[in-house]
Image (cartoon, one colour):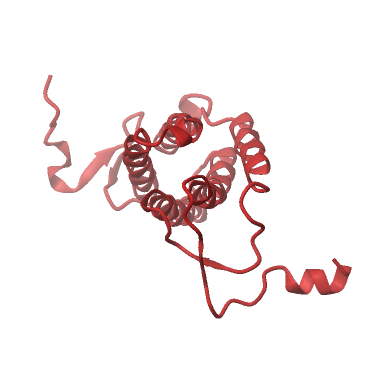
Length: 196
């Protein structure tokens, strides 16, 4: 079996189901960016194998890669051809993980600059790339194209998850976060209103 088809030589590709579209089509841009996030996460997973203290997080990231393939499949497949794969349970799963991890590092008082341990920096890269993916998915919606709403919700949570994990990786590996020196105190206005 050949890996190349030559079909894309003229700048077009096909969605699942046969629709012929430009490679710059908003839907192709979205699932292409999904592939970028998943590929970066694959590299992160490979590097995490050298750190036993991160084994549980590595397993979570491997599961997230499965979820990302579900999202990509949903983006490449017109809704009428099959039910969407991405499920609300996966959104809940991310939320539960974040709720468990957020209290572990020192409470966040100021904005932080991406950095610290190289793995934490990679998670920050994944976070920003996931935000770009979210924007691409919104562009699909704005083009009046069907998108799994759960998939968009999942991607929104995923960028938050990567932020939490970046801080947790620094914490577990004994590397401090880098504070933005001119940062105002986070949640300052809310604290003033509530007296907290």
